[in-house]
Amino acid sequence: MAPPEEKGFLSSLAGYYNTDALSDVTVTCGGQVFKAHKIILSAHSKCFAAALNGNWKEGSEGIIRIDDFDPDVVDAMLRFMYSLEYSNDDDTSRMIFDVRLYQIADKYDITELKDEVKEQFQRAVGSGWNTSHFPIAANLVYVTTPSQDRGLRDIVFEAVSKNIKTLVGLDSFDELLRTTPDLAADLIPDLCGRIESPEPESECPECGALLW
Image (cartoon, rainbow, N blue to C red):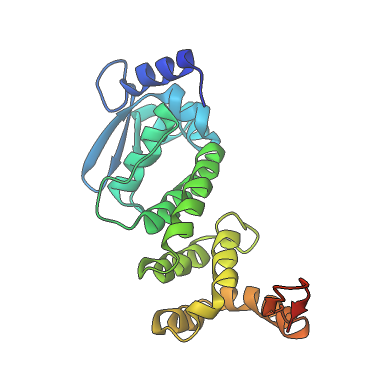
């Protein structure tokens, strides 16, 4: 937990987001405009630092245009830069929103945001793996992240592996496997290992021996 003085500073800093006060850069997305500060964006992202402090159009104009993400995702990214927190204020599933936020954090190399999203996504999956949103979020994870980035992939894999008996046979899960070959490839070694070394079914209540 952050000490009181740090919380006070972050609260004060967050008050400068999306206001004209000392703002020297504008982020545009989907017709929406967000007021920000070059030093804040540069401190969090080497990508933004290079664009704003080099001989690039963004630096000379003081405008960053983001066209490949929804405004709510861009807003959450920017809010995190000021407060080290983010929230989902629309009707999008928490899991799906987290995946989109992870994607933009990866694109702009915002490591702290990726770490925060992983924690939030872990909790969301833990309570929502059996909802209709999970297969959509799981597919989105594998579609939007490279194979070497295991941040969210491992969370999806572990949830599926742990609950495979419940998920198998569900139409939504079957469709997930058909449309997400990388997830299927991750699961095969795990399932083969279970076949070779099946888990005990129960434990003898008298002697504690494992019953198969």
